[in-house]
Each structure stands twice: as C-alpha cells, then as structure tokens.
Image (cartoon, rainbow, N blue to C red; front, top):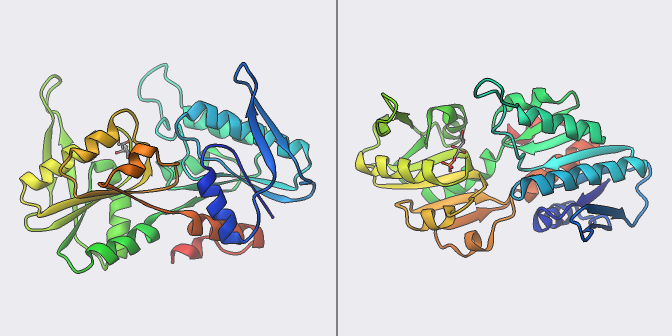
Length: 311
Ligand code: R5P
C-alpha cells in the first residue's frame, strides 16, 4: 500500500501516513510559470495499491485539477489500484438542478475522477449520501459522527444536552448523532420566508429552553446558517449553543463572523486544511479525521469491513 498526497492538505496526509506507519510516497506536485500543474512520482508504484489524499476545498478548481493529474500520473505509472481519498468533496452541494438550464456539477466531478483513472473513492460526510450513486466505482462514505460524538460526550456529556439540526435538510445527520449520544433529544431550526421579499422567520421545532444545544451539520461555509440559528436558539431560552460541523469551508469573513457570534464554540474537522485565521481563533476547535480515514484505508487495503467502523 502507498499513500500519496497533493498539496491540498499535507498535514492530514502526513497524519494518515503516520497512523498507518508508512512514509508518504515521494512525489512532487509543482506549477509551471503559467500555473499549469505538473506531477512527478519519484518512486516505483507499479502494481501498488495507491491512496491519493486530496480534499477538493478552496481553491476548489486547483485542488480538483491536481487530484485528476495525480490520478493520471499513477495510472500511467501502472499502479494496480488507485483510491481517491477526498475527505472533503468539493462541488457536492451542486448535486441536482436547482432550476432549468443549470448543471449537476457533482456528477461532472464524479465523471472526471473516474475518467482520470480512479478505481475507488473514499469520502467523509458527503453532502448527500446519494452522491455515491454518481460513481460507478466503489465509493465509501465515512461518517465523522463517532469522532464528534466522543468529543461532545467528553465536553458536554454531564449537561442537559439538546442536539439541533440548523436546517430541515440536516435532520437525518443530526438524528444519527443524537442516537450516538444515548438518544439525546433533537430540535430543528426551520427557516421560513412566507412571501418573497419578507424577512426569514426562524421557528424552533422542539423545546430548547434551559438546554445546552449542540448543532450538527456537514458544512460551515459563510457561517450565516449557524450564527442565525444560534441567535434563534438563545432567543428561545437555550442556555448555550455550540456547533460540530465536519467540513470547515469557512470562506470570506466566516471566521470573523464566528468570532463575533453567540456560539460558545465551533468544532470542525481537518477534512479541509484549516486556515491560519481558523487555527488562531479561540472560538474554533479542530478535531482530526486522520485515525478514522487511516483505519478505513487499512481496511480497504486488507479487504475487510469498513462499515463496522461505525457499529
Ligand atoms: C447546506 O445544505 C449545508 O448543509 C450547510 O448548512 C450550508 O452549506 C452552510 O452554509 P453557510 O455557512 O454559508 O450558511
């Protein structure tokens, strides 16, 4: 087995390699003067089971292109099997046509990975589980839930907990986490705009008064969803509000928004390499996915069960 990395999240790739007690494959991913990407693998990979670690977060297009070129280089170097390890799958939110004459970019990205030569895909908390069906190659979707649940239990286990989905779309994910927390009660933030042009109203479904709320979601991007939901929960009597979100996209002024929000803390994973601002924020904490992803890689290589990781 070999672990190779692009430039998107080297610290995570190194931590995965350390978990597996193997060195990262010696390769360089460089840029020509005109920004074209050039990949060179400096060791033999012929007949090897190769895992290329490259989440496709910001800059999404560069990181995606890098991944495709790495896969192409591995295929042409006769790797036996190539697994694209994409802890954050960019473009996943474009998984359906929101209107006429719009693309389904998540499907296009799946086609590109397959066409480049990936034999398998390993992702974490895909925005929608159905994205697995966009691939005709085996696709494993890992859940950050066990890592998040263990941390929630350690930090907030002795308090009156309420798991909250910050929008209706995330209920299944939040419910699954609540189940891991000894069936903690579940509340839902329901955003409604009754008429176009009218401001959004937040209805809280569930009794949050006097509870310590933990919001669960897959992505924090601008931070708007979380900050607004936190205000609504506190206005409805919640004692405190924290958030556990797998993918810290945190674009634009998101870190500043979180720092100035009413959230006690935002916990994200390292599926995307955290920015310096996120690392410096005393409101943001980062949990590593390296042991989980590393263990899944070991099991894929050994051809043993991956799903039993979540039993
Ligand atoms: C949406 O379906 C996702 O699960 C997140 O709720 C969303 O991407 C968060 O975006 P933002 O942080 O920009 O509100």
